[in-house]
Image (cartoon, rainbow, N blue to C red):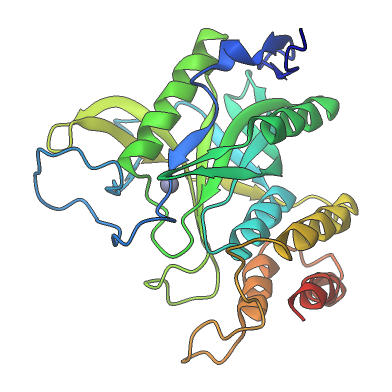
Length: 299
Ligand SMILES: [Zn+2]
């Protein structure tokens, strides 16, 4: 019997059979195959619509954040670049550490995964999910979240995103961790007037929104931590650019982003990641390197 070796490590780094994760594979409903425009919650509807986007609330003095979030700039760059190259939703995992003493989640790395499209649903390819968690554990980090993109619409979670996120939070809290966040990146939201992508880091609360009959999402006010430029990023970009060249739904990076701006999607991507490159780095050199890697693949 050749049992498929689909194993994955849990948050403690232990190997578990993928069966344990059954129903825990990261999946979400994609709009790739839909004609529907995204809907923003406005009126009370009783019908279940997994595509409905639910605005996130901010934490307040009354409703305090369960922990602080620090987001590494390199992780942000990886997610942002990954989101820019595909017209359809991309997905990946987040690695980091939780600092108990300071109640602070440090998100250190983002690992792009492949998504499989199964009709109406896109889900994370389990093999790629296993590779991603291996990579995270090899850096002595833990899986602390997932990310996906909303290519042309707001980074608010859909009802389905909320359901997926809840499943994960419950699963990880059973394992004793409990710190598992979701990040949504919107690179080409038509309503965004700037070139910088919108990034939302969220958690789902126990509070129920009576109108939508779903749990309320809250967004973290995360802090960006600038680490030194990592040469691994060059490899990461090369892998993404290589995959990009065979994507069915690749963004034509040389194409115009918006008529009004006159810049290409590739230039728009560089403008967006620029914010995450610290001033102490050779910014132009890094941007040129990124340009060259992706420009080559768009020719
Ligand atoms: Zn989503």
